[in-house]
Image (cartoon, rainbow, N blue to C red; front, side):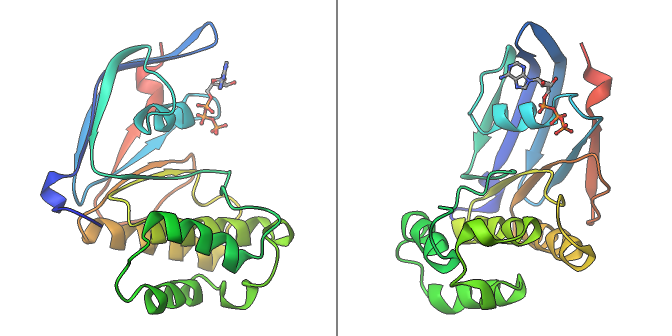
Length: 204
Ligand SMILES: Nc1ncnc2c1ncn2[C@@H]1O[C@H](COP(=O)(O)OP(=O)(O)OP(=O)(O)O)[C@@H](O)[C@H]1O
């Protein structure tokens, strides 16, 4: 991560979200600083992904606003890895853009791939990877991004039990290192000091 963790923040102020002709939620405010994590919980369709897209700057707020200090890494169901490329080359493409001159980058990356159980899959085209392997690959890309603010949209979907624990541990490590995590999920997500925001409380 670049910059001091004390400078990272996500602030949502009186946020409302409209999708189509429906206002999904309104009056939502929260602040996250470096080291903090928040799980956005709620039933299917309540607006969890929509909230993350607003925070990421990919969708407009209907009312209110959101300001972020720090770089954003979004992990969602689309890993944004070229399906035709072998996994190793697909990840290298992003790494060259995200962190071209990363010191100790190669060793760092190899260790992360090993930890994610991807080392033996680097020559497999992305389109052949299983659902869980694709999600692991999305975490590999997220880690190489070195973003301060992790926006995780259903990060545990498709992962087996061991990988669920790893995803939770990686997120805890990210926050312990000064990062921020905003986790949208209807599933339990276990990590220290995780706050929960029930989006249904803001349903319009
Ligand atoms: N572009 C769009 N136009 C109109 N409605 C949309 C659009 N995108 C999403 N929606 C609707 O907005 C609502 C919220 O969707 P969203 O994906 O944010 O919910 P969610 O809480 O993340 O759901 P899930 O738990 O199923 O992932 C849904 O009813 C969805 O159909």
